[in-house]
Length: 122
Image (cartoon, rainbow, N blue to C red; front, top):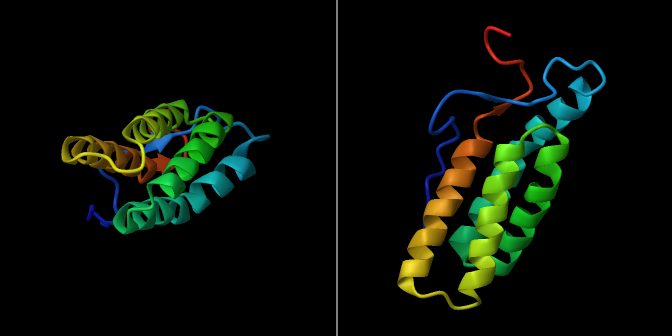
């Protein structure tokens, strides 16, 4: 179940929080962004080890947290992964695994793009 462990951003430029620049949210958004590499590593570890139940739990947690820190698109992708994992069950067929791998890669790519910095030009 290998997937890309490249630490850099994937699939576009930086993804700023809707709260970037809000002085009341700055520290919280920074904390969320700073923790993202550990979340990504945990998701990739679960995928590589075939721990789909744990991956579903991590996707669920990310879905719930992302919107609160101003990253609703991350939450939407996490929700799609959670739904896909639930539908696939404990022993997904090869096509389901391919779809899930694509969802993991898309979510990981987006997670690697999050930043606490305001959008350029803002």
